[in-house]
Image 1 (cartoon, rainbow, N blue to C red):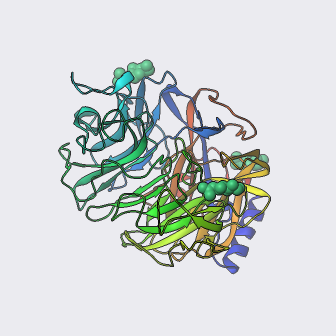
Image 2 (cartoon, protein in one colour):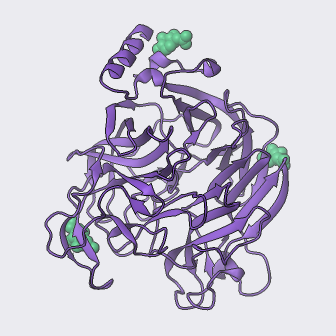
Image 3 (spheres, rainbow, N blue to C red):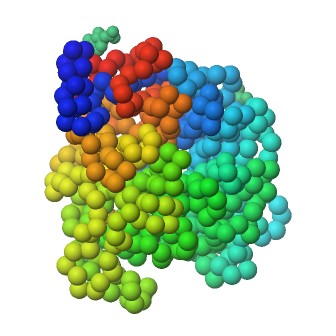
Length: 494
Ligand SMILES: *[C@@H]1O[C@H](CO)[C@@H](O)[C@H](O)[C@H]1NC(C)=O
Ligand SMILES: *[C@@H]1O[C@H](CO)[C@@H](O)[C@H](O)[C@H]1NC(C)=O
Ligand SMILES: *[C@@H]1O[C@H](CO)[C@@H](O)[C@H](O)[C@H]1NC(C)=O
């Protein structure tokens, strides 16, 4: 078996560097959790099972890694420091009051967590006790500050209204050079012009925990019914942002924040549903990756294509809607030359055009296989990993744009900085991606997952609570000696 894996490695080298099975390492059930974790969260609208996100992050010096997860009682977010080589626990976990593990940044001396909490204060609070988005910082194991991002103090309260956050479905990033955290998250307004509606907001917070609402890029109300957020740090604000809205487009909206800007793609949508281009409920992580320290990025998503363009009467002139090319989803990427520019052309918005997806770079282009849970991470400035789940014999519903079927493995495809596939994809049936893909100090890309039978055949709103977390890693050069203590072995990955 081992010889076979090595031969595969040599063969893929000969055809250009791809991801061969010996480059995938599994650390099954390696981390004992201090509390239990329910690995499933039901998707908005369909109730189909989604991975409940377990954010994972590594500090700039590479020595400190943290995993965050919501406990199964849904009363606290547990943040556990782990060894970046063995993935075993280091020290006691911290229990942070909160209801969602919505994003995590690792520092050399601790972490920052985006969660949702009960609002504090006595006036202008959210109705029905809806929580607010909160950023919490821990330094050397102790809480150093906690900053509410919306609720009574919502930015833009006077116009669109104050907002609460029933589900974050967003992301937290940190820019060392800007000295700023940025959070992009889902909101619903409980007063003001937008009362009762859903949108998204962007907040910036300083190293000291001060909200920096005067930062360019701060936003009260962006994309309608956005359950698809992609966010990545930049050297200065505004950070790179992408939104999928329910009117028919995915926007690179770094400069506009709203349902406008550079149109990455047209997508078939319906009122209140943008589809799940960035994973939908509990998704919105590892969809936009900065390529090393360059200013370039890669965006990856699941798309149904876009044909038969028609005028969007509600948005007005210059905005279009479309029909799906397929009812199943394929994997697409869009390289960005900077935080606010695409390498290729933007999508057209030409009423009457037969095809509106000619600009898309397809990683898969199947008519009878579905692809979901698309993630992307960069090894360096020229090698990018795209991952996705493969669903065979899918049943795909026109509305609400989703598919169920037989989970047939996770695909791992290496692409270049221009989105060109390098070698063929590796498929593995044991590993999924259910938390952020982090770059390790030794160059590997690693992420957490729960070892379980992954069933995408029917709605499911909870899973079997687990007290173990697994990790998997992919290296460009094959396994490194640092991690040969793996409980799995390379030859078992087919
Ligand atoms: C966190 O919660 C777990 C489970 O309830 C508990 O066992 C542990 O002692 C708590 N940790 C701290 C530091 O309070
Ligand atoms: C989405 O596609 C369906 C056809 O599958 C079409 O009936 C519907 O109008 C499209 N939605 C939009 C917003 O164009
Ligand atoms: C590696 O995996 C194979 C297949 O599962 C198994 O037969 C073999 O015993 C494993 N080897 C080690 C060293 O764990």
